[in-house]
Amino acid sequence: MRTYDWIIVGAGITGAALAYELVKQNFSVLLLEQDKISNNATCYSYGGLAFWSGTTPLTRQLCQEGIARHRILSTELDADTEFRELDLLLTIPQDSDRQAVVSNYNRFATPPQLLTVTEACELEPLLNREAISGALTIKHGHIHPAKTAQAYIQAFLRHGGTMEIGRVQQLQSISSPNDDLPTCTGVKTTSETYHSSNVVICAGGYSRQLLKASGIKIKLYFTHAEMIATLPVDLKLHTLVMPAQLKRFQLEANSTKSDRPWEEPGNQPAPPILDPGVVQFLDGSLRWGQISRTLTDPFAEVDPNTSETALRQSIGEVIPAIKNIPGTWHHCLVAFSQDSLPLIGEIPAWQGLHVFSGFSNPLVIVPPLAQKFANFITGKDDQAIAQFQPSRFL
Ligand SMILES: Cc1cc2nc3c(=O)[nH]c(=O)nc-3n(C[C@H](O)[C@H](O)[C@H](O)COP(=O)(O)OP(=O)(O)OC[C@H]3O[C@@H](n4cnc5c(N)ncnc54)[C@H](O)[C@@H]3O)c2cc1C
Image (cartoon, rainbow, N blue to C red; front, side):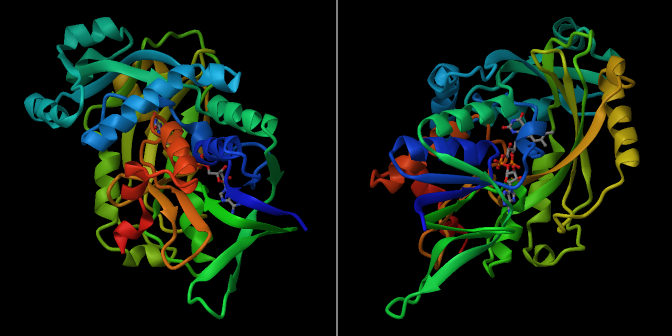
């Protein structure tokens, strides 16, 4: 019977980055993923790196470390993450108060610059000038998120890590007679039991439900996100387009005022929202979205036809040329926390059971935080990991 030092559940960007950083510290690591072909938030993400958006000394520092790490990641992992910088265009609708929108952005480390309608259309010629009263712009980082996760996984395997496909159903634990706290000893999938000294849950939007299956309550939530992906197209988008007033963050705040609706499936603590945004990847494919729903059942079904119509209608108002491009609707879960900061560290009242999830906009800060987590568990003090402990919500 093999006992790993660490088992990581979930091979999206969080699990992939953490698996790599732990194996680099010479731990024996098993990465467990339920799907053979990725079907997760990482592979449907836009891939934006908002390195300019820190609002506190800690998040500013993480953003700086994150962008520095992304700049060298392709070399370190020996695979192309498609890192680049591009112009982010944050659209301000016709009926909005431009000054109020601008002042909302003043809290960021580098506030974006206000553009007139004409300037915005020069930067993004596909923009519908009738739909906006202006826009904000800033240099944004960009990666191919699925290729980045794969690059981490391949580097993890080259360093001696093990990866298996299997759906974790439950945690294995023992209670020692001398100690009140249960100790996690591994996980059980549909077909195997795996043993380890430590388990980290990196299951994104499924983390809450997975922990609940073992009787553990945690203040980690999820949205059902919907978007459309296309094959490479001839049309050329020059910027990553998003609304300046993202409704998703308000949805996250509104839906977590009380934990009670989240304790059972079948609830929807706040109405769904749609933030029209689009990005083009280096191969010419497009990804546009995004509907977010706070359905408390992670397996709730949504009607793809109604959603696709809404997604096409809303992007068509901003970038009319995209509205009728053939594409495929996708759905995934995206994890978030009550304070928009991740939950990183040991789960309260447990030993050997950790979480690394709940990042709202994780792509820029996951690489440095995965490194910091690996350093932290080898005994190095770290401010970020200390502040992101799940126990802050007790
Ligand atoms: C349309 C869209 C656009 C986005 N744009 C951006 C952006 O521009 N910038 C940004 O920073 N973020 C963005 N995000 C958010 C970001 O992509 C996600 O938050 C992030 O990728 C989540 O990574 P993760 O590893 O936590 O979760 P996931 O990528 O969902 O990975 C979790 C993995 O765990 C596995 N898993 C779950 N349960 C089990 C189990 N029981 N056993 C085994 N495996 C399990 C799943 O199969 C999955 O592979 C966007 C998201 C969407 C949907």
